[in-house]
Each structure stands twice: as structure tokens, then as C-alpha cells.
Amino acid sequence: MLLAIHRAKKGGSDIDMDKFNRAEQLLSLLLNDWGSTLATSDTLDPVWAQVLHDPFLRRLILRFTIFFRAAISSYAPTFRNKDILPDCLPPLPESVSPLTAASETVIWQISQFFM
Picture (cartoon, rainbow, N blue to C red):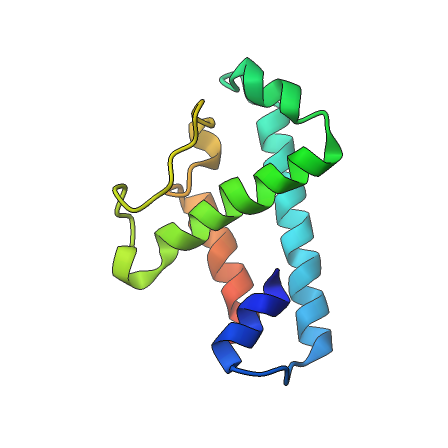
């Protein structure tokens, strides 16, 4: 996923693989943290709790539902605009909201690898 973002930004395949691997490691650690946050949440909807047991679906939720929403909300032209953000039904806990400082920090940390 990070490689596709980098290629779109740079317009080619010229990439420092060491930098990419470190960014991918950081993303994996951050996704694991989000997964732990979801698993221990008292406000997690039972539907999400059932899905989190499947490793594939858990990764899909973490990468595209949480990470993608956080990236969209941090994008300058749409910064914190709730009307632009995709909705999750049932809603995810506020602890993994794209508008939290923790989510914004994650996106900032990942973006620093590609500056």
C-alpha cells in the first residue's frame, strides 16, 4: 500500500527500499496498536467484535477503514471535514476516529518517510 502511494506521488518506481521497509514496519506496528485498541474497547459494536477474529478481515478493517479514513481526514483540502469522511456502520469506537490526535500522529509519522 505504501509503495503505491509513493509511486503515485513520485510518478515512477524510483524508491529507497530501506526507507520503504522502515515505513512498512512502522505501519504494521501502528496497525497492530489500532487492532489492540479495538480489541480492548468497551464500546466496540458486537458486529465488529465478531469480524475481528478473522485475520484477513481484521487487516482489511485496520488498513482501509481506519488508516484510509485517517489519511483522508489529514489531507489538506479536506482537513477535518466530517462531510468528506466515509462513514462506518456500525460506527467504530471514538478511540480509532480519524479525527483524534493519535490518528493524525500516525499519518504524520508515515508521511515523514516520504518527505
